[in-house]
Length: 483
Image (cartoon, rainbow, N blue to C red; front, side, top):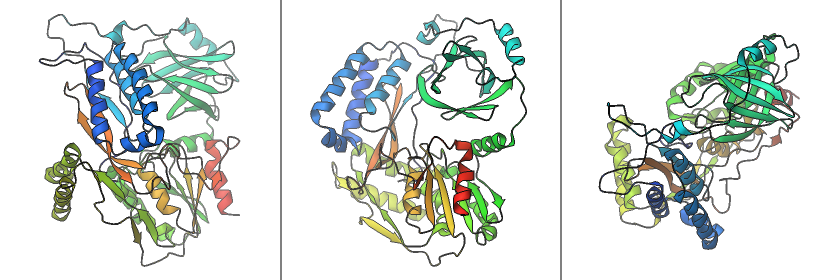
């Protein structure tokens, strides 16, 4: 995959305005027709899924979404429906970005946004009384006052569930007493995002002072309870934005890499260089990649030698040639902000020429199905490498895991990865009305259908089941490597 394009998550704007643009119709229906046509003609995975699921299933999906789209009244509602249409094809490497923003007040009357008119569920609570109640709790459980990002949230038990409500908010889309989350006694949580769309997770208590819900972590503010070292250590390692290394014991090093974003390459390389001497004389390495959603292949290049034992086979990909897709290569070659050297620019321009000769076809720009990379040396240490993975791993991280798994030193620990790799090289285009940006993919892996990863993921060698809480995963892997 191209190292400058990465996995994208749907973004919904916080404000909406009525659709209007001179000389063309701008509403959810017209935007849907544009998204549908653009995706059908340009996405590298479109026909693959149609062949797999069938034209009849696609027609039914189109009709269901078309009916919903006709009833859409807001830009945010339309965003969700357009994304829902895209999920017919895959769950990752797709996206709809809402570009609509509320116009500045110029003194003229403007339409009140639908968002400001919306009525969201509120919890009938006396906040000062609640604050006094939780301050005196000894065994608080989920009850208490919690902080996450710009939100201060109160959680109170109500019958067989827990209600989380806003006490203070730094987001204009949330007001005090609005319901931010609900936890059932089965420990499943419905968490409402910034734009009030619901997400469903399993809530995990990290000691007494932290709650984990998907990628959100809540820290207890009240009641004030003693700090727990294991919980503080876990939150430190899982919340870091930059790579770092530490020594667990005389036989094991721990390396945390939260992202392979191309902007992190320098930091990753720096940590590896600074600790190379120690890495090459320590028996075990734990590489923690949890929630590393990908980035650029170049970011893990310097890591491979520490894992390497055998030649690494990489299956290549092919690009769908269309006028719109091919333009990407020229744009990159001519844009000085990317800093490509002259050799790379020439390759991109040559690639453009080759693609233009095969419009409507898939083109293998590398002229080979598989490449085999051999390194000059196999390091004696580390002898064992345990890589911790979870459902937050996708895209480039999965590409790294495919390479790492070929080493005799490596075992994967954790849960199944996300599964977003077969259809790759994301690209974006704006709608004619400048209201939405569509993200789709330009390439298809030559692994499929023989080895599909999209919406399936990569399996760990050691599944860490629910009886092993996430904050104990490093301890589990450490024990296993030192047996």
